[in-house]
Image 1 (spheres, rainbow, N blue to C red):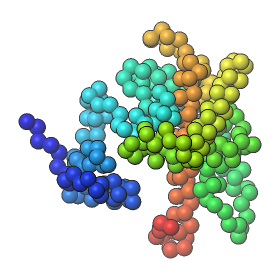
Image 2: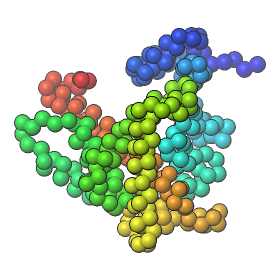
Image 3: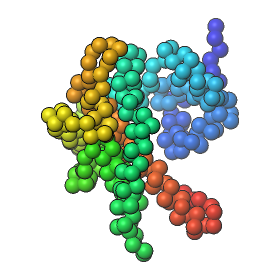
Image 4: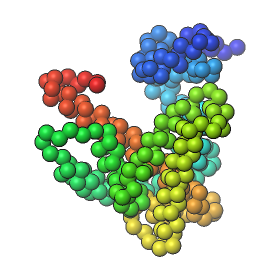
Amino acid sequence: MINPAPGPRYNPLAPNLIRFRRDPLSFLQWLTKQYGDFARFWMGGQQMFFVNHPDYIRDVLVTYNSNFVKGRALQRAKRLLGQGLLTSEGDLHRRQRLLVQPAFHRQRIASYGSVMVEHADRTSSRWRDGDTFDMSQEMTRLTLGIVAKTLFDADVESEADQIGEAMTCIMQMFNLLMFPFAEMLEKLPLPQIRRYHRMHARLDSIIYRIIDERRRSGEDRGDLLSMLLLAQDEEGGSGGMSDTQVRDEALTLFLAGHETTANALSWSGICYRNTLKSKGKCMRN
């Protein structure tokens, strides 16, 4: 019999879930300190495992990756992202990874640098000494413009507020849908649920419109969307991607390059400001 990984006992009152939601990093640091680099704990009635050592992580992600499937969060993410690189598994993931790989060649990545500099200069040129603004909102608009240009070769400034609103709503609701019984919650006629579905449909409408326009033009504009549309599965012989597959990959990259990057830039800006104020000490606020 294999001994189970060490960890705190199950508690139906879900204190681990409460602690994790309050401060994820602090909880995981405590777990490692108390139980080591491979620990077990319960989260809302579901048994979870925390792998901390690099060798163990490599075993899960590389050496024995075929023995594992993606967890609840990524399974639920399929409701939004479909079968993109982040959520797909097995042969489908391998095929899609090979099709998308050319989009990340060094020459392509280097070409995106000028787009980032241009948009950063445009954003900073609007700022004036003494102005007060919402750093998160500014960075969200910045990354939205960059990812739209590099991914779709599109200028979405006129739609930036609508797209930003849709993404904010989706990310907030997505966190809620990670809770137990979320499948039932999603079916309830609640205002938040209805709004989530409207925002989801809005993003789909924008992305499918751009895909349709590009297919009709047949242009290779040097962006990620062109690479996705031109990619051919030479090994499997199944041709290029369908509109649905292109949408899944595009939306995955769109969200990955927008929301998380905006958060990182916002945090960096706050740290820089606090560093100036506290002479080297970066404070959370």
